[in-house]
Length: 196
Ligand SMILES: Cc1cc2nc3c(=O)[nH]c(=O)nc-3n(C[C@H](O)[C@H](O)[C@H](O)COP(=O)(O)OP(=O)(O)OC[C@H]3O[C@@H](n4cnc5c(N)ncnc54)[C@H](O)[C@@H]3O)c2cc1C
Image (tube, rainbow, N blue to C red; front, side):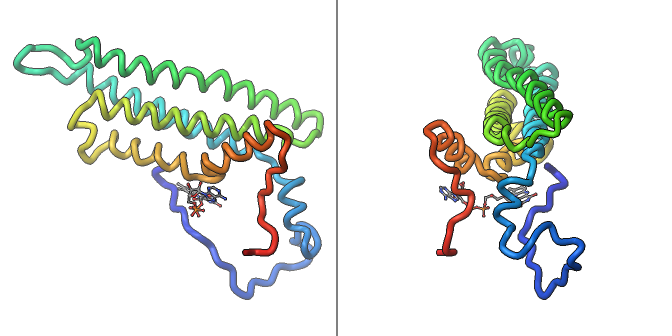
């Protein structure tokens, strides 16, 4: 996430040789619906899992080494702090098995030459859960590390990186809309007709 330089791209007067075209004029929508694999979503979810694990490990390291001078207790010696951490850890541990299962299903589809697009909603669900888990973990990390987590450094950076997961496409609002629509049998309407 740290290296992600996201921004709009505009193409003016670009000429594409015919041999490089993916299809014919006006076929773009069809190509996106049918041709693009949602496989990137498993990687995107894995990124949020990495952010969640990274922020958790960083917080654990801090609370094991930070000592209150007056009581000579480490932050890790407070039960309330350990409870906060454990809540986040349970969320984080839910991600690994789900990621591996999706990757294995993608492999099976790949080997049998079947369209991976059939996993779009399952992968979208994973992206939402992984990015929200990264936010749960980052919030817990800032709670248990107190003012230290808020200072410029690894923890505040993880917090900001975790927030990117909510907005990155498909944003979690749009993603939940797809999931809900699929549940009740409505079309996804990835594009709006008429440009209004
Ligand atoms: C770190 C990062 C990396 C990114 N990388 C890429 C990339 O590699 N490739 C790429 O193409 N894009 C990338 N994006 C862009 C990303 O896809 C968009 O930020 C995302 O789709 C939201 O679009 P927007 O920022 O224009 O927000 P807007 O469309 O202005 O949305 C603002 C808010 O409104 C909600 N919203 C939008 N439309 C609706 C609707 N119809 N109904 C209800 N709510 C709606 C959104 O969920 C969001 O909460 C990246 C973004 C980030 C933050």
